[in-house]
Length: 308
Image 1 (tube, rainbow, N blue to C red):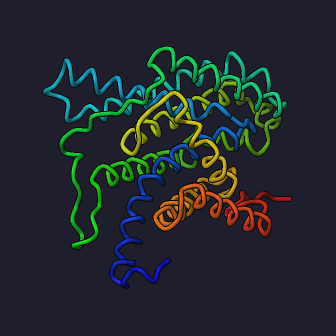
Image 2 (image 1 turned 30 degrees about the vertical axis):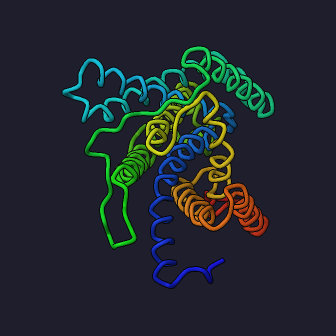
Image 3 (image 1 turned 60 degrees about the vertical axis):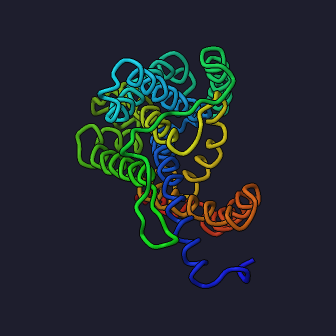
């Protein structure tokens, strides 16, 4: 497999695939952060998480069309507005879903899994009815086009670099929110001891709703990032939900740093192996590697340490 390439060509291939994997890493880390926040606090396995991502992608698509047709002079900056709207719409839908359905199913993980899976099918059909079955693409501003020429063979796409900066910025913001704010202390208190948190006056129901909305809102931002690396369709979220669960479990369900490290490792492994192998074989080898590591370390890469 490697004999057909020179050393310089191999190094360039690994570098190019590494940079390509950064775009996938950005989507993985945003999706997994939202899922880890929800699962880590409430123990809810949200099978509709991919559909919240696609809501953000469709929001970005509609925003791009709106600016292109009615505000062409401001088209260069539409993506920032689209990300904000994607977060708000996805968070609002997440808060409604938590109030209408999820709050009635706490401490019933199987029922929650089935209910959110049913919700994913409903949302897919809703997207299909509203936007059609065909996939749609987003027109990027001119400043996002092109690439930085690193060497004669290696280029860094500008849009991929931009999305990666967004993903790392949001990861930093989530870290500061969870570990450097009063609301974050309430969240961690509910995670560690819900009855005691209620006893000291914390509104655990409100914390749950805000946390679920935050996780869904981050998934919406992941949908905005997704529009830069692929086209959007009603069932596009299902292609990422399995990988997202894999990232969360591998990194440690309650570890933000573990989620980031896991997303980086899995995205880079898949991106590099897909060049030399088929996409399905790359996923199989990645999954086998993760399963073997989890057999040796079931709690994940960076499990939350608690006092016994």
